Every structure is written in structure tokens, then in C-alpha cells.
Image (cartoon, rainbow, N blue to C red; front, side):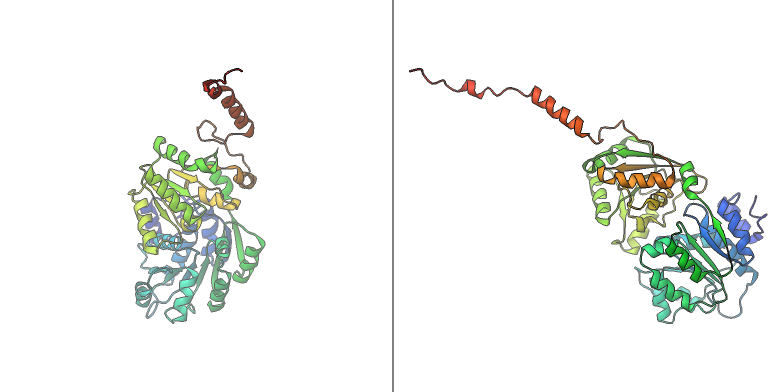
Amino acid sequence: MTFKELGVIDPILKALEEKGYSEPTPIQQQAIPVLLKGKDLLGSAQTGTGKTAAFTIPILQSLVEGFPPKGKRKIRALIITPTRELAIQIAENIDTYSKYTGIRNTVIFGGVKQHQQVRKLQSGVDILTATPGRLLDLISQNFISLSNIDHFVLDEADQMLDMGFVHEIKKILKKLPKERQSLFFSATMPKSIIDLSKQILGDFERVNIAPKKTTAERVDQAVYFVPKQNKVKLLVHLLETEPFDTVLIFSRTKHGANKIVKKLSQSGLQSAAIHGNKSQNQRQNVLNDFKDGKIKVLVATDIAARGIDVSQLSLVVQFDLPNVAETYVHRIGRTGRAKASGSAIAFCDTEERPYLKSIEKLTGQRLPVIDNHDFKEVSAEAKAAQGAGKTQNKPRNNSRRNKKSKPKR
């Protein structure tokens, strides 16, 4: 099947061809026809499946067919996403797909001054991609009106709730027109997500892409059992001996990410970290350097890494295993994107064994164990044997022999 067979119009087809998109992914095949009919959509899909193109192409086409608007352009499509990085990534993709359409789009997010964002909004845009906080802030300042929205997208809904944005989302929903097309995407579908989707969607169809299996098929995965104190040593060893072009390392905490960068630097390995304590400009500069190949090793927390989209990412390293199994799938989805292959390895210490068990239950597969390394965990029996060996080989204490014997009386 081709994009043309899906009914995509020529201006968008031309941009897709230049981007190198030869045929639609499964989610694009299922979602685009539904959305071109104007129906609402509930999608279960993760990043790396082609989801952004699946919802932006039909929106662009709908706007083009109603183009040009009379008077000043008003926001007719709104895309809400949880992180700044993901918002920027979506806006960049819209720029690519809309190259020959005349559609204008912009992106707004917190962590930077609002002046430049407000200027773009005042010039008139058709599509707005936003994070919840900055959107509500600019609405309260009367820089944004949502009264003309025809298309509304809530992307990464599960992460949105995990980050505590549920109240912001409900405030935004109250400001939207009742008559609109709504799209709701989430990697997981717990009850809280289903309940939220019912508040957003009208007459909808459902698209379910099972990325756990497709990701596992595309990505070579393995696990190293290694004590916590040896993780950095193992990481340095791998980076020095394995031929990887670009490496993304996941840390559970901001402090941990900084510590990894420091330890790598002490070993002569250049890397950089992105996390919530970094300013938006710092994070974006590091991401650009990583995408351009100026930085080969990037250390990130999960929040900061959700929007990373780097072509030909060689390796994902889970320095810390996540305590939520779905997060593991999100992480390995950074490599092996679309139809590309990739590699992912995980470091697992004793305390993380239950996390590994949950991951294997979710993915339905056992991770291959790499056991031929010098940094692995030593069993209690081996430690006892080593201790016994040291005792046997320990020189006898001859200090008594060196003492002068007392004369006999």
C-alpha cells in the first residue's frame, strides 16, 4: 500500500517522498483513512511507530482543503504533548510534511521566555503544538483563543497523567469547541486513561498497534547482571571496546545522569546529560549536537528523553532499570525506529531483579544474558570459596618465631 492509495493529496505526497517515506507504517495505514473521514480516533501506540505522521498528515490535508482562511489566520488544530522535546519534534515533523501546503504552524513550551513564541502566534498560525502549562499561561494572557479549533490531539496521554497534568488537560478541554475532531493517543490503556478518553472523544474508531512485539523484533536486546558499584566500569569498558556510533544512556535520576557524565569524563569519554534541571536552551543545544554527531554519548532521564528522535541510533543502554515495565519499552523504542534495526542493553543489579521480571512478563520474552564479562555479580557461594582460598594461601604468621625465647630456668 502507498500513501497515494490512502488518499493523501499531492502537496503532502511530494514532501513525504523527499523525506524518503516509501510506504505507510501499520498505524498510518489504519489511522489515516479514519481521520480523513473526519472521525475521532483512540490510538494505542508508542513513539517509533510512525504515530506523528499518522495524525498530522490527515490534519494537514483537512486544513489544506479548507485553505485559504479569510482574514487573519486562527488556530484550527491543537496538539498537546507532555514534554518540550516531544513538542519540538512534532512541530519539526509538521514543518516537513507541510512544506508545499502553505500551512503555518508553531510550537510553545515552558522553560524559556515567551516573547518569541507570542510574536509567532500574533503573526497567525494554523496548527499549534504545545505543552499544557505554557498553553494555559498564554490563554490566561489572552494571546491564544481555542474557539476555532477543528482538530484536537492529545498525545502520550499516559505520560501526561504520570506527570500530573490531568487538571491542566481538563481545563483545556473546557475551552475547546464541542464540535471538533479529537484524537487520543496513549502507549498504555489503564482505567484512568480510558476514563479520560471518554471525556475527549465522540464517535470514534480505535487503532491498536502492539509495539511491544514489533519493537522486540527490531531491537536486539540483552541484559548484564552487574552490581551497582561496577556499572560505570562496565559502561566504560563497553564504550571503549564496542563499535557504537551513537549511544543513549538512561539514568533513573537527574543526579545519576550528572554522575555518569562525570565518571565517563574521568575515563576520557565525552558525553552530555539532559534532564529537568537543565534549561530548555541547554537541553536543545545538547540534543542538536547529538543529532549532528558532535556528541556520541547522551545521558538522559526518562522525562527528557521522550522526545528524542535520532535516525540510526546505534545503542540504548539502560544504566538503571525502570520500576515501570512500560518505560522499558519506551526506552528501547528510541532505537529501531520505523523499520530500522537497533540494539539495547540493560544493566541489572540484585535490587533490580524484580523490575527485570516485570519487563520480561510485559514483553513476553526472556532477555538474553551476557555473562562473559569481568564485572558481574559474584554469588555468595563464590565469595565464600574465594574467602576460603585466601585463607588457605595466606602466609602463616611467624611473628612468634621471631621473638626471643625466654631462657629456661
